[in-house]
Length: 388
Ligand SMILES: CC(C)(COP(=O)(O)OP(=O)(O)OC[C@H]1O[C@@H](n2cnc3c(N)ncnc32)[C@H](O)[C@@H]1OP(=O)(O)O)[C@@H](O)C(=O)NCCC(=O)NCCS
Image (cartoon, rainbow, N blue to C red; front, side, top):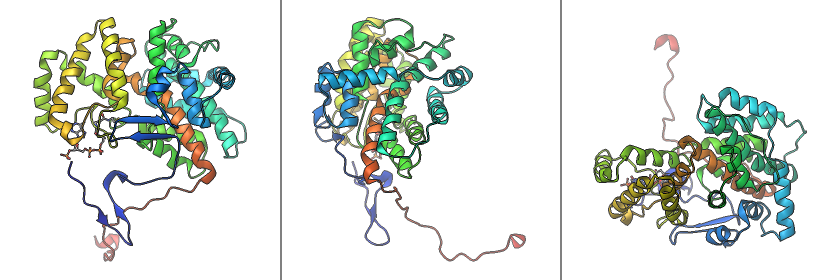
C-alpha cells in the first residue's frame, strides 16, 4: 500500500488522514497485533478466552477489572450483572414506539439516552459511579437489543431470567426459546471476540466524549453512533447483504469483477491495523460453515469462501484479508436473527470494551483536543452584505 506522505504542520506536528498512527494514551486493556493477526485482552489471547469456559462474563470482568476473576469473583460478578438486566417500562415503551420504524442502532442509542434520563441519582463523574453505570449498561444491552428484535417482528418484549447466563438469556429474550447449547456457546464466543479492539472509531468516540467529563450515557451514545457506520460495525450487515445480492456462488466472479470495475470496496475486508488475517475471522470461518449447513444456507458460506479467494488473490498483497465482519453475519443469519440486528449484537459485546477504556482513562483524564491543519485564507477582505 502506498504510504501517505506525512505533511508538515505549524511547529513540528505531522499528520496522516484518519489519525493513522496517532497515539491517544497508554492502555493495558487490549493489543491488536496487526502484523501477526493476534488479538490479546490484558495479556490473554482471544482463543484462550473463547475456549476457557468463563464466558462473556469472564471477559467483561477481565477487561473492566484488569485481572482474571477467581471462581467466587466470577460468580459474584455474573450475579451482579444478571440482577441488573431488567429495563424500565419507559424504555420498553420507547422500543414499542420507535423500534419498528428506524434502524435498531438508532433505537439502541435512544434507549441508552433514555436510561440516562431515568437515572435520577446525582452522579459525580468518577470511577466508582461510572463503574456502576458501566455494569448496568453491560447488563441491559442484551435486554434492549432483544426487545428491539422482537418488537420489529410484532412480538412482545420478554423480561430477563437472572438464573441464566448473559448470552443464554440474550438468545432466549430474542427468540422466545431456550437456545440449544451450541448456539448459546457460539453467541458467547461472538460476544467475547467483539468485546474490545484497541483504539477503534467507536471506542475513540466514546473516550473523546467522556474526556469532557460528561455523563457516561452520553459517551456510550457517541460510541453507538460511531459503531453503526458501514466502515466500522455496520460492515457485518453490509457484508451479509453482499452475499444475499450475489445469491448464487456461481455468480461470485461476475459480482467481484463488477465491484472492481466500480472501484467499490468489498465489505468485510480490510482493516486499519490488521495487515494479516483478522484472528476473529479465523475463529468464525468454520463456525459460519457449521451454522450455515445446519440452517440450510450453506450457499452463503460458499459465496463467502469464493469471494475471499478472489479478494485475497487480488488484494492480499496490500494486506487486505477478511475481517471480523466477514463471517459473523452468516452465523447470525443462520441463528434466525434479522440482518439489521447484527450491529446491535456487536454493541452488546463492545459495551464492555467502551466501559473498560473510559474507566481506565478517567483517573488520568485530559480533554481530547486535537487540531486540524488550517488550509484556508488568512487575510480575506470583508465586503458588507449589501454590497455583495
Ligand atoms: C476497514 C477500513 C475502513 C480500513 O480503512 P483504511 O485503513 O482507512 O484503509 P483505506 O480505506 O485507506 O484503504 C487502503 C487501500 O486498500 C483498499 N481497500 C481497503 N479496504 C478495501 C476493501 N474492503 N475492498 C477493496 N479495497 C479495499 C483501498 O481502496 C485503498 O486502496 P488504494 O491504496 O489503492 O487507494 C477499510 O478497509 C474498509 O472500508 N473496509 C470495508 C468495510 C469494513 O469491512 N469495515 C469493517 C472493519 S472491521
